[in-house]
Image (cartoon, rainbow, N blue to C red):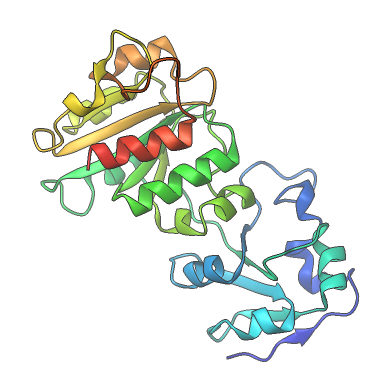
Length: 268
């Protein structure tokens, strides 16, 4: 394990990856999605270390940094909690952060096919989901419930933004994702690849989600819209089937993260 360097000056350039994180994951003037991936907390950093992402540096209070088995070549920095807070811009209750190089999105055709084009496969497809924390929660449920990848329309939040990674507990780092630039026309590419696309909606004329038999459809894609507006009529029209989660009378809908978890479990 590499020896940690003690940081005493909050302006030390060696911890520039972690400076003023409350303002975002990248310095002012840089494009969205171009900064390093920022991961918070020992469990999430451990998942980062087991992922394909190249770790750049780890920074935290001494006990938390020492708890990690860092490979050679990873810069390790320690500081007391006051210096750490001054660098990152807020009090970090998890005690450690790491930065990693970004990886490009997966190639769409490869994501659709998967390692075995004949094997069952499930995807989450997100439209205009611009809340980073909801996206992170959906990613965590997706990994837990066997979803193999995520497709994003061009308006979705960055799945590698710090808040998405934090809420996912680092699980988003093991979830392949790709962008579907032609929306919603690009959904036809899923259908050509053998997917049944299921658009979630609370509409009364949608079929009951429990009536969609996953055994009859080994390749399934669950479409989810943003909190509040949900899927656009155009996206619902482009899907194979519109489905609703049966709910008690008087409740019109669920939050998108909860609805996603239910759908992933129901179509497992």
